[in-house]
Amino acid sequence: MNSIPEEARRGRTINVRVGWRVVVGLMVSGASLYIAIHNLQPRDVWLAFRQAQYLWIVPAVALYLLALVARTARWQTLLSSERHIPLHELLPTMAMGRGANNVYPFRTGEIVRVLLLRRRNAVSAAAGLASILVERVFDGLTMILFLILAALIGGIPVYLRYILWAAVAVFGAALALVYAIVLWPSLVEHVAEWLIARLVPHRFRLQLYGITVRFIRGFASIRSVGKLTLVLGASLAVWAAETLSYRLLMNSFGFGLNFHHLLLMSGAANLGTALPSGPGNLGTFDAPSILVLTRVGVPQNTAISYQTLLHAVLWCTETLAGLWFMWRGGLRKADLDQTLAATGSSQPARDQDGADVRSTSAGSARPRH
Image (cartoon, rainbow, N blue to C red; front, side):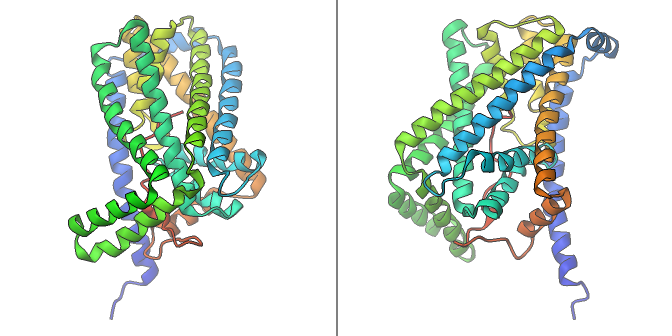
């Protein structure tokens, strides 16, 4: 007789799964923070904060919220073939998902978004996951375009070249896969079946093939090259607004960057968040930004002070927006915890088409803000 209750075994499984993700994320965040602030002079940082002009937070937050609305409009475009969802209905889901990213590790907020989308708007998990993958790919592509534009304007420093080439390889391959699925879904499905049959152990083949097929079919709502091109334009608008909000907040500390350096800072900082990290991309968003700022002549303690304020403002804006919509919708954090636990149990949550919500990685590559 098994003396361990079934629910206890499930809970222990969830804790193990969450535990290793937390450990890996915190290790990466810790290493990044050490790189960013190991020469920190607390007295100088405190002085920079005392002399800062905090009124610049207001227009920076306003611009960032505008970018959040633009993100939601982009997501609405990706989901439009699956179901038309009014912008005012989709915005709370976007805000709650992004707020959850600041509380849970490994970008678990993306899974929260999929679950809320299914619950609130009856959109399948497969379609929701496909739309978020496309978002992440185009976010990364936009950051690459920022760095390429910076290279054309004033060159790209040696310390960023390897980051650029690695990002081109990763996001270029992802973009090619997205377009292949959109243009030739049957061919991609046959190739996936062939690879699974030859590379995957027999006992895992059926489950993996089912997940792959559901994922590919989730792109049915995005099968338009014109729609993907529109998404690219929207991504450029989103990131232009967010980068401008970064620039506005620099005025709080009495410095500014030219267009070339601003593109370098934004591109490097947001590509850094493709790494696994703790909640809110702690460290992985900050270290590349501080590195670029100090290399272009900003004093290190000023750069650290600025980056601390920037991250705090973005974190608070996203988290408070998410909490506001949770309160309006009658949701509690305990409700999200319970829903996420269900997806990690031995009886995974599935939607109408049987898509397993766990079939995507919560740590998918994605620029931070």
